Image (cartoon, rainbow, N blue to C red):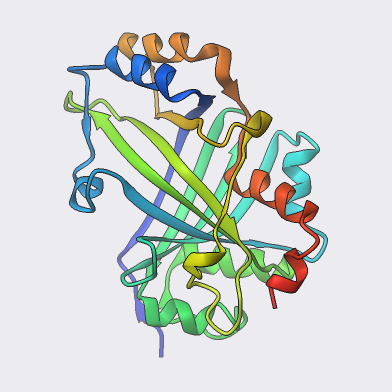
Length: 254
């Protein structure tokens, strides 16, 4: 019998992304000294937090095509955990972007529950949770299956001022690999492939600026400093474009 879940999250926010050289990122962050502080959850994992995501897509790559075609309304389905290997909670996430506004819904499952559900998304859910039920519905409707594992080392910041909901993240060392049976959540360390990103700039860094309502004046400084490097960028899409060029991608995924 499914248990009741009290752990669910749903929110909307604006997101802007910048793919920039490390020295430009450091200069931009210096402008925010005194306004941002490191996120406490990320600090518990060390100077940089590793996040690993298992992305789902349909046989015809519906979500990938939405992005490549420039659709103003697009979706992603993923299961995210924190660390090089799964060891704690897993977050089942629906990420929907409508122009610059991002809506995210997510539900939290234990690692054991996640490993049981992912191979059989049509099974009875272990919890009563609206976000998880929506994830299941979308996955079944699109016949979505695990397609790619993507990793990043993240430094996360949030606003110091109480009541100001601003977050900024810097992703480095991004990489991808095909998921492999029987445990599609667990990557093989030797199989990570660097994510090149825009213009083959492997060493560049991805900055994401996130806020829910009015943008504070000081945040405008960093967006202006990084404006030449603003991009529409998805780690899943960039990784999948690379994977589809790789003649061994299909072989490695079995």
